[in-house]
Length: 333
Image 1 (cartoon, rainbow, N blue to C red):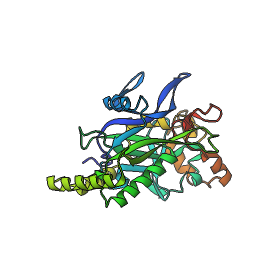
Image 2 (cartoon, rainbow, N blue to C red; image 1 turned 90 degrees about the vertical axis):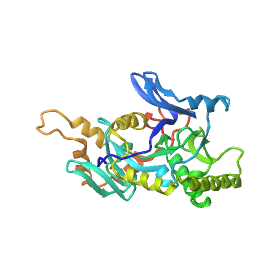
Image 3 (cartoon, rainbow, N blue to C red; image 1 turned 180 degrees about the vertical axis):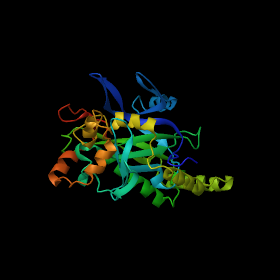
Image 4 (tube, rainbow, N blue to C red; image 1 turned 30 degrees about the vertical axis):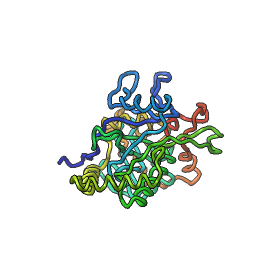
């Protein structure tokens, strides 16, 4: 197996709650109040919708806000991977990922493991350069038992809610998370920060019309059927864990380009922007962003006020105007 290459679940399509739109020659994210299920193919007009999108949408009067799902793994951390992530917006390469305690960072000396203070206290995270970044893999339909659809988000509300639900469902089902019939649901709320407008985020719930007892009974029935037919869920979880651990960064180079465009669209006055501006010229060895990050990590952290000013953002409310909401906030859910 190639070392340094993360082996991730096969992807059949994407689940989004927004899209990229053309605005003054730039492609910027625009938030939506419903799900869209796409294939992995895109044209100049955007991502091509998956046939499942129309199938599920027609049963919900045109607004797709609930998706029946199952999960690939019994381990919540395999279904949902969440981390703080910093990308080089110029090259779209992932540079640093961390969990709030430790991070893996690409430097001029190679990959290093360093302390991770989380964005609020990290001098590299100013201006929103580093965000919480989550990826959820789910099964939709029965055509491919190992092919999944991926939902990506940089929203605190979605990441926190999904992590809690997965942990709770695993606990009450007796570690039968992978056999529970569940539902991906779009929820909305408003806060003082959103000025009363709706903020949309993603949740995992029981399927509509199913009680908890029905869901647990079906999970047990399917678990027993798997055991009878030789389906080894524990071995699948172990294989997935080893695959994720095979690489420092989960997203490939081609995936990172789409991630940066969709979730890290602007270039604020951050270490990333400064490094991009400093490249080229008459230097014998161009200054790279990795070099800038390594040098900046040795400097004193910002004051608490500066850190709060650069990271105090929330999921973007629907309908916010351009002055209240920056393009990089528009996709967060």
